[in-house]
Image (cartoon, rainbow, N blue to C red):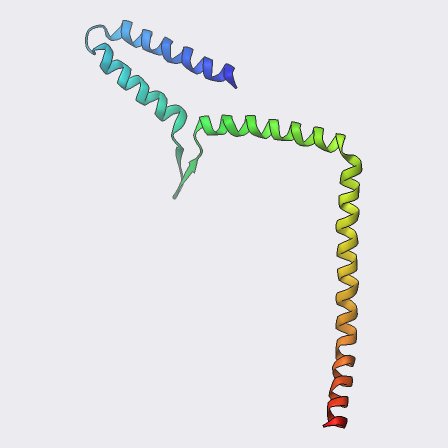
Length: 130
């Protein structure tokens, strides 16, 4: 990532020098810096807008895309490492989740099947006692 930022800085410096050489005295150095800084900001840090037929699509800025790629890569590397180092822990977590899920599934099924019978018994007792 630092290589890409350094490249951007070198690009900015080269652009500044080229424009300065070609434009000569038409623009002051300060005017040129303002224009160049705004151009770099727009090119690298503002969302990109594209006309697609009858709609406008907005994409993230190139800088945000670059950061996302870098973070995505790092997160995958860390996750892969953690998973390879903690296989026993992962298996234990999967067993716990599945066990709780199956237990709840069976309990819900029995409650559903038995619920009607329990309700009938309850009604019968209330009618006999009442």
